[in-house]
Length: 193
Image 1: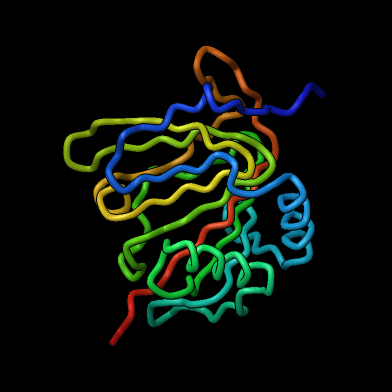
Image 2: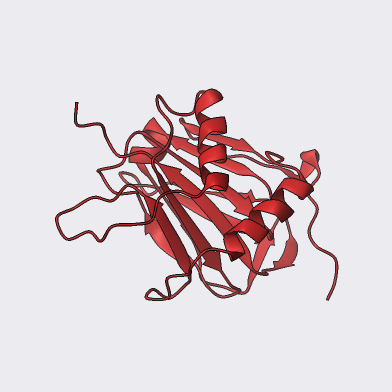
């Protein structure tokens, strides 16, 4: 099966996009193991091309209600809030599962969400692509297991982000096979006050 990819700090190349922050070792291996076990206890929605779990705030007139964010997600949301990533604790959490060959098209998160989107990567690396919506500039970033990606302001509103549908990524001349990856994304609905 081969060894899992283990990044060293020298291999990390972060694009210079205003509002993009990347922390390659945000949680420990033990925390990752505990989070994955907790996620596996949740109910997967299989109506999309990939499995997902949606918790917390919903929006739109036809939106179905979602279960509340589970305790493990509330703890992460509180940690992120205390670290200053949001003015109030995140109220929406989305867990996505990506198997080799799965991805997500370039996009910006929906307008009802506030200025910051935070995503924690678990289990396997992948390359995320970014494209400037106005001039088509492009950048890429390898997301490592246990890393945290924060998109605010320009990175959130002007740049699109996505993951190509493929079974391998090429990063710095190295071919890296994809394995199962989980992402835990936190967002905050814009306050109606």
